[in-house]
Amino acid sequence: MINTSKFISSTTTSTTIVVALIGIIMLANSNSGEQFFSLSEMVYGQSSDTTAQNNASNNSTLPVLLIHGYMADATVWNKWMDLLKKDGIVAYPITFKQSDDKCGSAAEHAKELSEIIGQIKDETGQNKVNIVGHSKGGLDARVYLANNTKDVANLIMIGTPNAGSPMAQSSEVCTPAVYDLRPGAPATEVKMNPNTKYYTIAGEWDPKAGNCQLTPFLPLEQSGSSELPKPNDGMVPLSSVESQDYFINLGHSKSCHTNLMSEYEYGLAKDVIVEDSNQTGTQKQQQQQQEQQQLQQQQQEQQQLQQHSQQKIQETGVSLDLSTPAAGNMFGGDKKGSFNFSFQNNNVIGNAKMNEKPAEGKVYEGWFEDKGDASGYTLSVGKFNTNDNTLALNQTMVNPYTYTVFFVTAEPVDDPDPKPADIVVGAKLPIPFGQ
Image (cartoon, rainbow, N blue to C red; front, side):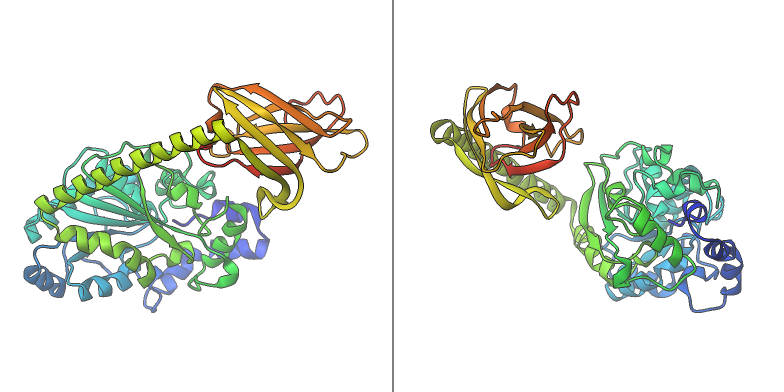
């Protein structure tokens, strides 16, 4: 996915000129070795002769449909084509013809995918394909799959803005494709197809480490790396790529957005492309049954562990150190106090003690927080006694085990703000808390 709006609005005049020249550079480099800007004609819904021969000799594998992203073309898959050929897998790096290839909408591309996939099935004799989509190519495939089709076994999305990207929020570059990349766009909110498995590969890019091609889009990715929620690939936050709970994460890459089609990412995707496509229907059914049995066994073991842990807490209680924040956590630094407690039914009973007095005009206050909850819900359990810096707890909770952290703040005396101030110390609650 490539976007210029965010970059244009937040960078210097000299960098803006670079972006304005992108279109010229794309044409000027049409005969160069840069894969990203090559405008060479790709075969539409057809494999090369060599790949077709591979398919004839290895017809148990599913063909792979490769869909490029926004403002790109099929040449981004040149490296993957070599790797797929080496593994004997027929592949189709397609170019959309009936709608704008580089800037077409996901909805229009999805309509054309129906025809393209039909051609691939006719040519290969297979009734299903695997799809790999980079960036917006993953959204094109998701929109196609929302029609509840049964001809795609697996979809692998590489750097796909499945929840959109802030960089596309106000851009008008390469319309209508850019509209699909905005947070909340219809293409990002299509339903799941139960006949297909969805996989993701996301980038965790650090510009200081390199791992990015020298293209006119590099300044955009460098700017996006610092401005987008971290981690990100310079164009898309990792959280956007992995935004749906039914997505299966295949791994993370250290490359930038435009460099996510390398041999490394192929290695992450290979097991899905090769192993799953070689399985028969009976083998797949057996594997699914085994996976379901393993999941049930894990759930039973986890439930038994929770019950055992709950019983242990009720019988013996828990003693924790209260330590200063460290490494981005509420705890883990120097010990400054202690927290001892147990549960009786839904009541937390215990005491907390701080080793040092708070600053003048401050008073300590104790809190529970559910760090696993997106709402970040916190519950105050009272202020410490100023005479001995202790807190006696006897708090009734609906479900105490949803909380994951106990922490202490130093609040102004008679503070009217119900929200916690800066954290002084904290402690991570043991299992079964947070389960």
